[in-house]
Length: 428
Image (tube, rainbow, N blue to C red):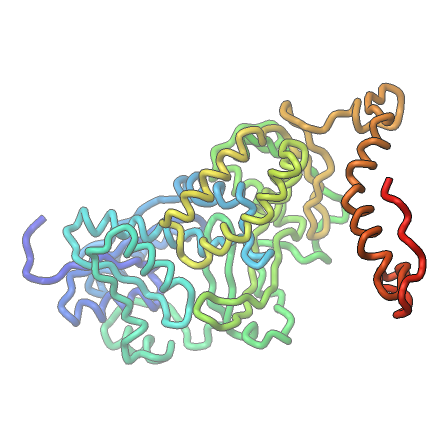
């Protein structure tokens, strides 16, 4: 690579209006720009992508197919952790950002760049994810975010700028929604969705059928797992990307995966977001079904306490942290026995677990059955109950039965305020 007096920057480049204008804006300020386009799924093959980048002034375009890495190293670990932001969002966009940041850093080092750049706005979450991830991986690199500082404050002004610089962008000023898509989900915001009273119109949805148009008859699919990782559908072994895409089609055809939420952004504002994630919803439901027979009670309780932490660190841009390493280690350990098969029923927007089996199952028919073959020793129950209830009886006799009002009313509150007059019975 030839030496240059100019500063070199690697830009996360989607090929749309924002990043094409960012390319030119950086060039005009003395930067040599290398554009990096990362394919994390559902990226339409745009034959004009390189032409557009070069027309905007880029030195060259680097295209990285990262779908397999995204599925194996980001999607599946988050799925195994049960990561849903605020109990709903499966974090599709948030999961892709640390991967793109890692690739930005890698290409920057290969190209001898001193900076990386992105086209994120100053009021979104993505700017935090890119900046924090880059700082963790390569603190020596400068981070440029032109949209946070330039004079092009509206979409219309960006279009005027692009046309003035002869950047071949096919856009209109009345774009309805802002959309981001990858293997794990589709995020939609802006337009009529900015009013949380407005019901999402049908044109918002692209991956899922409406409940009205979904089949009247349910569909069934069997998902095979090995150590928490989905490896097959209906007995057919599939690579991670193919498996996600297949489940995407199956679940989406039954209207599964639509979400409409008002979420709390990291930057402090509430935002109305609409998501489509048919594969994510179906696979996470199947995974929970298998965990129900392969994990012990305390394991499940601990996972439920930690899964919100896992979701928050992804949403908050903290993928490359010691905290994440610790939670990821716990998740891998917890998943070592989560192998087996789950049968899902797909019908009218709902994925329901209707069957689960595992060579590591903790469900024992001989203990659970009420029919012949019952091996549960019921004679042990009275002694267990006696010990289990001991602290309850002690506190009731020493404190609660002596409190004003004495006996409890039906809601657990003392029935009256009159002092108790009876002596407490002995504790047995």
